[in-house]
Length: 104
Image (cartoon, rainbow, N blue to C red):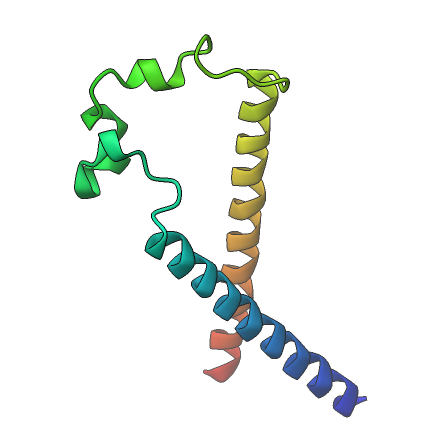
């Protein structure tokens, strides 16, 4: 029984390492090719603080952004994603706390 558990753990570690390498690779690719940037809004690190962007409402105006998906669906998906990530984070914290308490 222990061998099966060890192989699952090693498989999970391999998947985690592979996933991390893939995410870092894609991140570097996006950074190298400047994907997702708007040249007219190059404020350096301040570009991520929306209060610093002049006429920010122009970029989030519903008249400018046209999509077949209603805005409330997009907002609901964003909030659901946040909730899922929070639950995942809480679960990971609980797991690491258990491992730490077992070592003591």
